[in-house]
Length: 472
Image 1 (cartoon, rainbow, N blue to C red):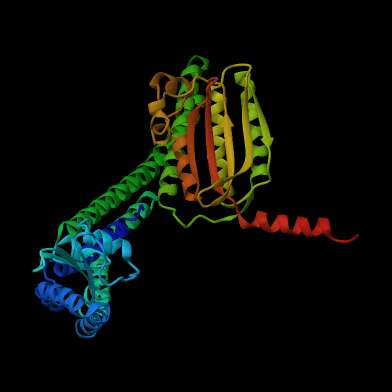
Image 2 (cartoon, helix red, strand yellow):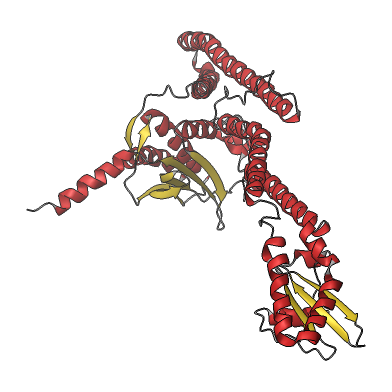
């Protein structure tokens, strides 16, 4: 039972119902009914009169006396002599119980535990005038000791008590857990990228610890939203501001080439490379800022992943020639997703180019496309595998953060600044998917991208099935 609401509700309700039943049982056990108390006070008289009737008038007189007692007091009497013989020759249905009571092996209704049993008896043993010991066993009527009988607690009142306690426990459990439910929903939205998510508790309704926790969460979410908005705005502003001097730098570079001699060409080429690198960095920063603020505003259309991956592989194969490696594509299933072709192209290309950069020479980078099952249904699974040095285990989740680099020296060597995989993660998340990385046992890194499949694929399958089954 994972629900906190059910735990609280059932625990409180069970405790209330148990308390109610125990209170009733203890009350009945501690305070016997007036009928039982009256019968208990007449045990000695019943015993003497029954034995006297038997001795004076025989069986007929004894039976007449027993019938009169049964009609007046609604009890059955059993009288045993000192040999354990029933004087009246009863054939009682609970004879085993009667024998246990006669021998004192069963607790009787004059004790606490005896009043809790399903059947109740009274017992009296005396030595009468003839010098013999007689034992009287009284079988009490059911209605005098049942919980819901005329002299017990009415069943309707017990039912009302259980239902009313259940209603109170339900209201209490709902009151305690409702802020937690709202807090969980807001946390999920915040984790999914909705920075405007709030749990929202009215200040006038609650002032307890749970309400304070929810308000603290809302303040934290508001602070995070303001920081993320400021960060995105800062990246956008800086990127735009850098583009103008960069454009002027390129113009000045061309003028310098025209006016300088051959001895300055090496320095000018270095300036051009750094300017190109800076221009790429600015473009990536703009992409990061655009992805951070484009939730729900990206134009979407059906995207054939096989065609997209084949196009990326052709471009990557051309670049892989400089690294003495190859790019192989393996398409298991035809997958169609709804999204932005440009963003998906950039997301997958960044992973493939990263694999081409770090894989060992004379090895292959494999791109595999297949259909898989996720928590929300069918998904397109794209796995990019290389044979490079891999990533430390503690950095597998960090490589998708902006500007994170495992090795600064390697970053300088390859020209990377740690934005490619960050763009991949944000683009995939924008399409409702997820990306993760893992080290291969035989060496290398495998990056897995999961995207929810479009219903277009299901429709295409139906059309193909109908076409295949259509009569010729």
